[in-house]
Image (cartoon, rainbow, N blue to C red; front, side):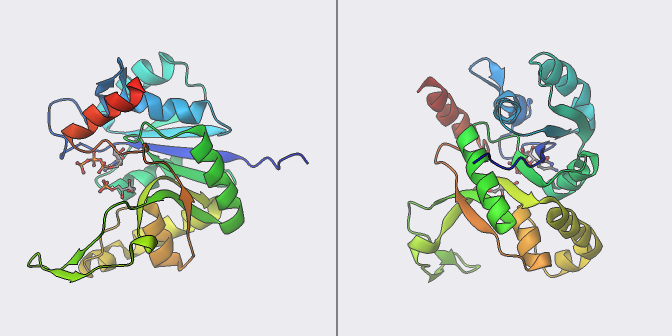
Length: 238
Ligand SMILES: Nc1ccn([C@@H]2O[C@H](COP(=O)(O)OP(=O)(O)OP(=O)(O)O)[C@@H](O)[C@H]2O)c(=O)n1
Ligand SMILES: C[C@](O)(CO)[C@H](O)COP(=O)(O)O
């Protein structure tokens, strides 16, 4: 039977400043195997079933991204390179605004260069089934929940603990409504000490909509601190 064709859009985020990485070049532009980290993230989406990609970056990096990534590598699916915002979730809103109408929206950290076509496929399958899903992997270590003094408060059942990655994929009207609601309730959430660190959290918290955990990969790391670049180089050499 022929697979139903959905129109799929992607927001690829690259507007962060990379404080934890440090250094003068933002981590998404550091070279890995001679190409910027962001190249690999975009390439995976370009080579997939995704129909349209919006790249979100800092205002100062828009022309670099346009010339040195989109034009240089012929990323024809990138419809817009647009300016992001202060927090990751602000950048997501900028991306959603620039993206045209589609059935499913993939939100991906540009700093996760090892996303694969297989992960994108698995996420689309789950998104069509559940309306919302995030790539992730079960943790390998025992996890402890600490109190403010650094003392162990509890040890959750490891079989139920996952490390969450991107892409995070949603039915388009659901994620658009969730982010609209977030903007309306941003102040209230901040006052409650709730910090939004991923897209699933917006859907869980504001829409009370269930989100499926979809198998990602242990290689789908986020480049966050300097040692991640060495790990990434070793993955490339595999
Ligand atoms: N205002 C922001 C913050 C983050 N991001 C993007 O979101 C992804 C995940 O964020 P993170 O790893 O935290 O990146 P940075 O914010 O750049 O890093 P740091 O927190 O160390 O400053 C990255 O691809 C980053 O470029 C973004 O588009 N806009
Ligand atoms: C979305 C994310 O990559 C899932 O692990 C992560 O939450 C981003 O968080 P960060 O604080 O921006 O690293």
